[in-house]
Image (cartoon, rainbow, N blue to C red; front, side, top):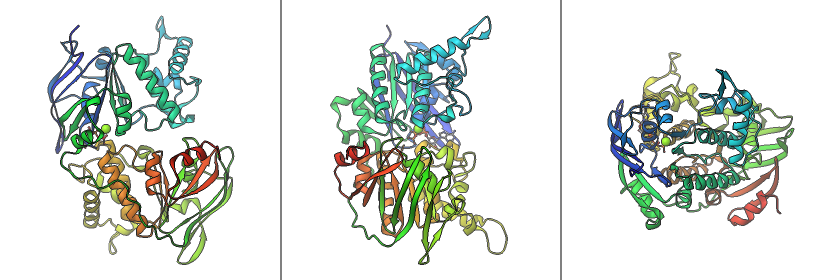
Length: 497
Ligand SMILES: Nc1ncnc2c1ncn2[C@@H]1O[C@H](COP(=O)(O)OP(=O)(O)OP(=O)(O)O)[C@@H](O)[C@H]1O
Ligand SMILES: [Mg+2]
């Protein structure tokens, strides 16, 4: 057999205003789990898009088992045994699980789609991942975790020889994650080459054997993970740049209550949820995936309907009940689901950054957007959050995943609302940026903002929160103070209190 199994040589790719890949050499072998890591915008997704036939490199070649592979389309890639689980989910919400899984290759008999075979194969593929979903369910009715599993199951259907997983665990519960890691283990045994992209370095050390680190479109280094420390890897990722310290606890100055939530209920989702949030406070909303945290956030902001309950804000010293439609005047919502709720993807960075702030940008004299101010503001926040862009007019769709997340944050920061709800604000960000965003969250609270924080990263929650509410099955089951130990939070979330 020719080794290495996969070889990419001298891959270069230019986009308008940026060279995303500057001559990358990359090798992967059968039966290895290889981590592809690097800061936001380093070129990870671009390199894998080249391998997956999503885009074509401007220069460079791909060899599989020593033979030149001419990969120009995703279909070419599939014919070479390459399957790709994308960073941004690529499924159709209105189609069923089976339809999504077989969108490009329905099993047919005499040219007719064989629905029975389709269903059976889907059920088997899902069972392999330990999920018992009905293949006839429409995707829009599934949890984000299940959708992610469907996407992974779909990639496995083609029995690939190389599988690319681009941040596959971001919406998985810990049980689903454990199951995925088992599946990765058995794929490895079967001799599949697995390329694993993630910003969660713990996962890298847990599931991968070797790492390749990209920095600014070049290979910065890598090696066998047994021989590397966490700090070695971070150093390779960020070069000589300094990372601000993790999260030194702030001395919080907690003021008056600004948000009152009373008796919020929605059948089957939320049960009589009440709490208050104070000026200057970071209130951590903790719970397992599916406990109702995101649903609570969405109900407060008016994205989902409620059956009963009242939401009030304090403005200018008096209380005011708010209608869901007006919530956005007081509450900034930062979510990980930037594609669905956050951004206008085809539009420019500039427009997206100023989107939440249009009234303030309308020129006094002419009912037009003040372009100069819009540009200045956008520049300010692009610099502050170090958003990697080639110009302010670059469409947001073409930014790297992490940089899109920063645009969502920039948009709200410049509007400066008194209350924020942040749902997984650092999801998909590299270690350096995560630290930076955590610092900004602390500074916002110090400046008097009231923040409801949701995060699956327990260290992030403990590091930032001044108080915790713990949810389980749609209700608040515990309230814990700052500095509560991890195991206490975990136990409360599991309902063992
Ligand atoms: N279609 C495109 N048009 C213009 N620029 C692009 C396009 N796709 C990617 N880029 C640019 O290429 C660079 C590399 O992006 P890429 O998405 O590969 O980063 P990444 O390493 O996957 O980052 P992340 O961890 O944030 O997902 C970025 O500067 C990005 O803005
Ligand atoms: Mg990416």
